[in-house]
Each structure stands twice: as structure tokens, then as C-alpha cells.
Image (cartoon, rainbow, N blue to C red; front, top):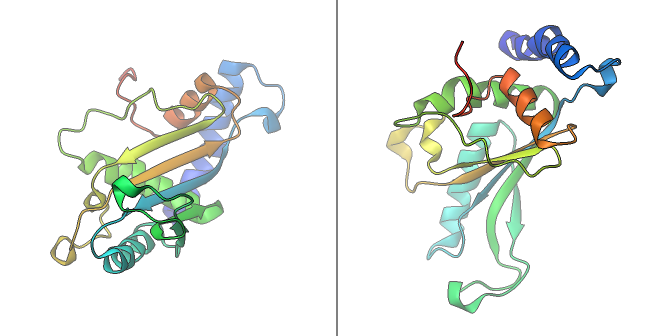
Amino acid sequence: MSSVTSLKEEYLQKVVPALKASRGYKNVNQVPKIEKIVVNCCVGSAQDVKNALEDAIHDVTLITGQKPVRTISKTSISNFKLREGQEIGCKVTLRGRVMYEFMLRLTRMALPRIRDFRGISPRAFDGRGAYTLGIKDHTIFPEIELDKIKRNLGMDVTIVTTATNKEETKELLSLMGMPFSDRKVA
């Protein structure tokens, strides 16, 4: 719990003054902050969807510390053997203390465990204050036991901020510890 408060304290003591100095904000409330983190995992229309979905829910619960909700398909796509209303994945929205804890584990423990890791792409911003990171293999998280894995899961991690453009979002996430591939090493 002390590490979680240290990430929030790091934001308040280091990131906020740095953003105020570089962007010229006059008020603390103008400084962008992380609103929420959404973790989305899709198993699609696999042969054993029930078992795959249960495994995905279990693993996402371990990774995030919060039970996800099941997501259902909105339309039918015959080429993918997908029917409308079929359960195809799960998602979880993290806020507050759990969000800071997940962000700390993602940036400091999980991402460096990726093989041949050289940083994350600086091009996945949506232009309105969100950054989406695709993770191909969920075994990078230390909570997952490699012996109990039945199938590899991919997931999308969307970090939603109060920033208004791509540059503000990138600067905020860089100061929070996101290892972008084009950042300058001091």
C-alpha cells in the first residue's frame, strides 16, 4: 500500500510542478491527471468459449484486483462464427487507489518483462487524452503463474486522462513512468 501512495505522491510532488512549469498552468486544477484505466480482454468465438471466458475472467481478476464484467457481441458476423448477444470477453474499469496500483505494476514490473522490450509506441494516442496499449501476452504480469496457463490472452489497456491533446497526454504519461520508445534518456 505504501508503493501506491508513493505513485500518487510522486504525481502530486513531481509531475504536477513539472507540468505547471513546462505548460504554464496557473491553477493546479488545469494540470491533466489520469481519470481511469480500462482493461479489455476478448476471447472471441473460440471453440470452448465458456472455458476460455472463465479463464480470462480469472486471469484479469488476478491482474487488476477487481472482478471484470462480461462483454457481449453487438452484431452477428458469420465469417467469425459470431452471434449477436454471445459473450466474447470481459472488461474492467479501474479508478482511484486500484488504478494507481495497476499503473505502478504495469510501468515498473510488467512492461520491462516483455522480451526484447525497447519501449511502447508513441503513436497510440487518440488525440483527446487517451492512450491505448495492446498487450499480446498476459504472462508478463507477475500475478500469473506460468504453470497454470491454459491459453495466452491478449488485452488492451486504455489510459484515459483529462488532457486535451496528444502532447499533454504524452508528457503526463512520460512523467508518470511510461517507457515510450522515443523518449530521451538522461
